[in-house]
Length: 596
Image (tube, rainbow, N blue to C red; front, top):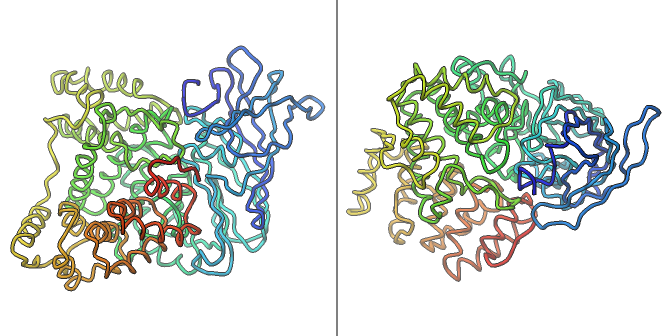
C-alpha cells in the first residue's frame, strides 16, 4: 500500500493535475461510457501510472505524443472486495494518458432511478456519491484526497434530462442533451459528482440557488432562502468564499446522506425540506465544507476529523450567527450527547481523534466515527479557552495558509503550536492538547453545552416517565426540543407510554425525518406493532442512512423484529442507493460481508 492505504495510487511518483471527461449516459443499460484524460505531473523516478478502479471495463489506454495518441500497455489487478482493482499503466512519462472505459450497472458510486422513484414520476434520474472511495467506480482516477486536480467534462444524455456536475454549471435549465462544464479549482476525487434528471433552477441569492425537480423547487428555495446570509456571515468569520457559486441540488429521497459537499453544487436530501427551516443546519454544514474539507482537505481518510470536525464547528458558528445563540447551543448539546453515546462500543484506539480510517470499508459513511464529533468539541474548547478574539483569526489564518491543499493531523498540530499555542503561552498545556488528539474518549475537563430549554425538557421527560403526566407545552416544541426529549429517553418504552405520547402528539407519521428516526427506533425497540405500517412506509420512502439505519438496528434486537426488518428491506431495496443497501445488509447479516 502507499501513503494512503485506501488507494493504490502513487502520488509521490506522479499526480493528476487536470482531468478531462467524456461521458455518455445510458439509462437503458445503467452505465456510463467514455474516456478520462489525465494531465500528469511527474515528480519521482519511474514510468508507471497507477489508477484506482472498481468494476470498470477498460476499453483502451493511450498516451499523448506530438502526433496524437499511441496505445499503452496496461494491466488490471485482481479486485479487492473493498478497494477495487489497481489499473497499472506503463508509460514513457507521458504528459497525458487517456483511459476509455465503461462502468458497471452495479457501480457503487452511482444510482439509476426509475421514473416511479422520482417526485415527477415521468423521467428517470441518476446521481453519484463519490465519498469516501466510490469515485473509482465511475472514473479511473487517483482516488485519494491527497491528490487534487481541476477538471472539465463533456456529457451527453437523453435530451429531456438536465445534467449537472460539481462544477460551473451556470443557472439555465435549457436541455440540449449535450453539456459542457468546468471546475477550475483543484479538488480531490471524492468531490467529483454528476446528476441527471428532470431538474429546474430556482434562484435564492446573487451567488446561490436551488436545483430540484419541478414539484419541489419552490418549496426547497423557500426552505433554503437563508443560504446567502449564511455565506456572508461565514466569509466575515473565516475568509472569502472561493468557489464562485454555491448551489444546492435536492435529490430524490434515496440519497444516502443529509448532504454531500460537492463544490459549487451541494447534493442534499429532500428530508430537510419540511417547511419550517428547523433542519437547515444541513445546509450550514455543507456550506461550511467550502472552507473545511473542500478548501483545506484531509490527505487520507485516517484524518477525516480534519474535514468533519472543523466543518461541524463552523456549521455551529453559522447557525449561531443566522438563527441565534439558543439554537446553536441546542444543536451543540445534541452533538455532544451523540458523541458520548458513541463511546461504549468503541475501542480506546477508536476513541482517539485520529481514527484508523476506513479499514478498507467502501461503505464508510462517518456515522459511527468518534473523530469528527470529538474534533468539533476540541475546537469549541479551544475557542472557549483562547476567546473568539484570538481563536477566530487563528482559524481564518489556517484556511488561508492551507487553501487548496491536502494536509494531515501532524500538519495541523504543527500549525496549532506555531500560530496559537506558542503565541499565547500558558493558556492551554501540551498535556491538554494531547488528551484531545491522542488519548481515548472525551477529556474529563471538557465542559458540555448547556441549554436552558433542554433543562426544562429533561425535567418534563423525567416527570412523565415517573408519573405519566404529559409534558406541558410540548405541542409547541421546536424540532431540537423533541430530539432532546427522545434522545435522552430510555430505548424501550411500555406500550402505554408509546400510546399516550403518540395519541397526544401524533408522532407516528411525522413528516420530520429527524424526529421520525428517533420515534420509530423507540417503536421498534418497544415492539409497538400498531405503528409498524407507518414505520415500514418511512423505511421505504427514505434512503438517508442517518434516518433509516437506527430503525433497522432497533428492529433486529428481536427475532420478530428481524424478520419484519428483512421483509421491509426487500420491498425498499430497489429504491435504496448501493451504499445504503450495503449498510442495511451489514445490520441484517452481521456475520456476512455485505457488498453492494
